[in-house]
Length: 340
Image (cartoon, rainbow, N blue to C red; front, side, top):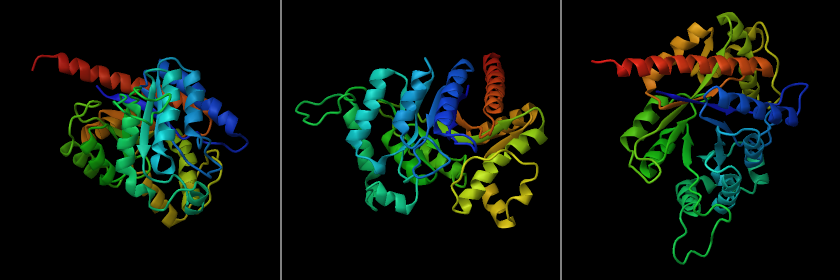
């Protein structure tokens, strides 16, 4: 049985704005909890005109207020940008408002460029203390110790669950060492997916939060009635990656008929490498793709990006993905219940 969740990039579209994007995220989460999705995550990115989730904890609050049971959280908070105490207070407050529904995924990348790093007052070497910062944050969210003089209020004794995010073996090894769930960002950086999963599982040490390894795999999935239409919808994300390669962090663009007229041969090569962990097509095509991915990764959970420009079409894509995952899980459950 494989859990399935959503990573929403909270894209700002052409002819749109941040409010529309945040309201669409909230609407998607409200629909998703009825389709069986486990969690809904948003990520911290700064100085990006096409993404509306820079103030991630505020965006989480907006989405959590419009839902009732789906877990809502960060995928992730870039911890070196913040003091552990501030993050503990923010997520402790979210947990106080929405108890038992808040996740805290943590990354060590900046989520922006070098110039913006300086505007964030981030020290160039702040990522080096990421392991210590994770432990400090965990302690601030954990039980109050005798004589403890600094407390996160709210936050102390909330035990908001932590998740380590990464795209290399560093985060995988750390998550294993600390006994935390691990989410791999294969939706945009798939090169080390299998190596990282092996590292995580081989180095896992049980903890109070997590007794056994729990691996989450990021994947781009778009479902439409036909393979051709799904591939056309996928050009929105392909153009966004092309802009990123060009140093242009623009707004999300409507899909086009021929992506090869948009990018150069080298841009195509780089974009396809970044988007290699993508399953695009009709329900039958996507079903087979998901089965293959699960067989290869043994993922406990998929966290899915369906970067479709039109909101209604995006909702439909996520609904169809849920239908496919439900059917696959039912098949797995039935097979497990049969005698050997």
